[in-house]
Image (cartoon, rainbow, N blue to C red; front, side, top):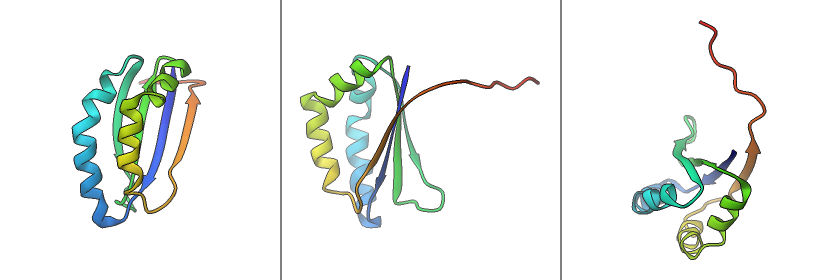
Amino acid sequence: MLTRIVRMSFTEEKVPAFMELFESVKHKIRAFPGCEYLELLQDIDQPNVLMSYSKWCNDDALQRYRQSDFFRGTWKATKVLFSDAPVAYSVNSLEKIDSTL
């Protein structure tokens, strides 16, 4: 499984516009073939910095999503709201440590 984290910075006044956009597409993203998890995170110290955290069955599924017309349209609407360039990470889990209690 692949985890994708995208850090996005917005000006304060554009956060509501992004939240409205995300609300309209979140279930479609989550339903995209290969997407197994989706979460939106907000930086505690910088509330205008949001991160999407998603899990994909593999890189091929993520790439199919990224090449889709749906993603292209959503990304086009999102990137005009940025105050800084986004930063994206695709990572594989090496080890999960559960509580021993």
